Length: 311
Image 1 (cartoon, rainbow, N blue to C red):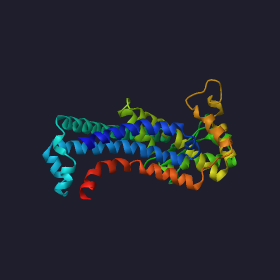
Image 2 (image 1 turned 90 degrees about the vertical axis):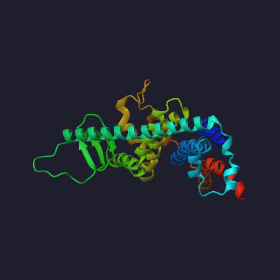
Image 3 (image 1 turned 45 degrees about the vertical axis):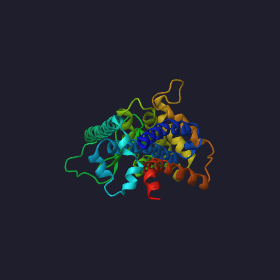
Image 4 (image 1 turned 90 degrees about the horizontal axis):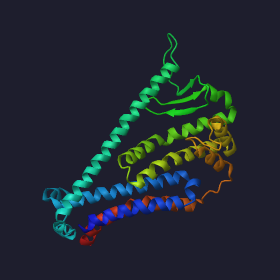
């Protein structure tokens, strides 16, 4: 049980330490794409630790599983893991982690089902609010304009994705500001940010007592907006993008003394108006490489005894 226990300990340390390090760092706001990659690597490492620990615990508890897992391995590799000394804790750990894995899959399936239901409802609303005229054929373009008194725009992903914008937004935003708004929404679509939001929501909803998953969900919501802001600002300028955010949200109370749910909008505007302090290419590469190595650590821990036995 030494290796499975070590993997569980490593997963717990990663879940506790990595979010605190990312929260204290100042570079995620400047490089949201790198921060998104870092958070995904942390969560992948935690899940990988649990999966590998479950596999080795099951191999230690049951000979049938051990035969399948170590079928092609030499005898010296099997002996290096000391699988016969796990005792009853091996079976308990394997069953508990297997239940956690099944629960994770169930939460992901639930999130997919709910997301599809929400998309169907929103597409039905689009047909009601923007019906086809008699004899009109459905258009292949992705832009849908809705009558509305509230300035708004959003991307509706799916098999037939649509970029929806209200007439109030078209009246309020002109020229490059409107282009920046559309570029922001297109940035979400090109990066498939909806998948990140769905996966993080499924983990946070399935394991509400695990802080790393709640932090993962919250940071995904924040960082995808920063990443989309950067995509728009690279094409139309930071000032133009900031002004578009202000024009779109000034009637929603986000800049007042009692901000609404979109409280991150003022921080996004301030970030865009602050002179950018970009990381150097070398440091950005090192941060990306370090994040990519996080999921490799549990793999090395799991395969370490076998590699030593072969060496």
